[in-house]
Image 1 (cartoon, rainbow, N blue to C red):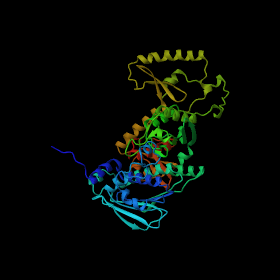
Image 2: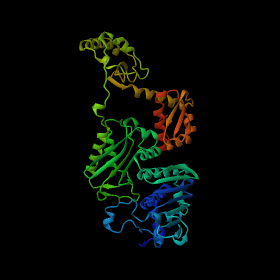
Image 3: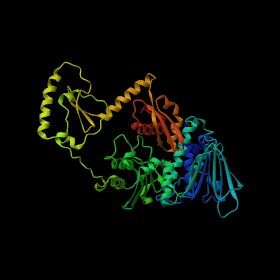
Image 4: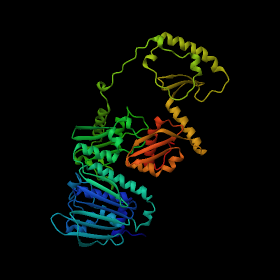
Length: 529
């Protein structure tokens, strides 16, 4: 019979590491949070081979007292909380006291630190094998440096689940982006394999903060967002929300912070989605960067080891506050709407198609919307035309001919919808959606036959994108070329599209490319072309 016994320290820490340290990005997240909690104003991060070979983070924060260095790598040892009352109102990003111990159990870790009131720094080393911490004097400026070498060297099974170097570094970049948007006053520099990837200067005023938003989330978001600020019932919400015209195919530009901590929460997501419901298609996703300030005692952050999830005490109040704040911001006052001048067109100048022309009409692609004046036909004339149409259509319906799946087209409404008739009755077809479906099926057929026709653009299309999107375009350039898309990266945040699939009009090229890049960032593949 198996007996109950206490686990060894190393094994217990490795089990805890399974929750805290999922991949290199998890290590970067924990170290960044420690640096920010230490009031650092400058953080430098060096990554090698996606973080598997080396993660080095240096800050200029308060540092660690020499006498505490041996405890720094001990499990459940922390300087951030001391009692139950502190846990109920956590104001720091970290508080569990298990991150460094978990990281040290699956890597070779070196921690060096110095406080401002002493001249000597101290260094502690730990090998994942024995967890023995060795403290020694060292030279170091004020602040802390943590080096994590050979991540998962003693747990090869964990290494097998890591992705490619590029993918792992993408996750590291996302972690850095989230923290860069949480603390504007902190300068952050990120290097990968010796190459500068991100260099963000500290932002102190509104103009500098907007500049950082553009650097992190891309210039298109910065140009297509609106700043909001609302306060009620002890809650303060502020930040930037993307206009409905800047919707995304993926939820990849959604950042929400509670008291400086980035979170994922169903209540928040539902409130935002509901606020955009009237101005966004169901399949599109809004873009936003929002900050919520509230009483720390009203939110429980001790829910998940990674601290991504929280629990709100007044969920309904929070939901309604977020919804109302965003809904007011997205609602454009009538006074701002441009005044529409209705053209003075006489009824005689309106040429309505005859019933025979309507029956012979075939879909050739989206038409330009007709003017409102052209839709105002007197009721008697409408009845006469409908009666004539029914007389001509009725014999056709009895002919023993095979009707197309969507029947025979009778006409169009507002230049947007097709009115068709088949044996079951009337059918209303969205012309734009039908056109896209036809193009999609033809593209699929051409791809299956290896004959996707590419159409060079007379004037190349210039797209301003985020650095991540530009990286994705470079990485998948060969695959996109097979699909008929040819584009080059001409600047860190600029793509030049030189060719598109022949079935895609240039006017739709920008939206298509942006959606494809969003898919590639989210899933590593796309099914849009």
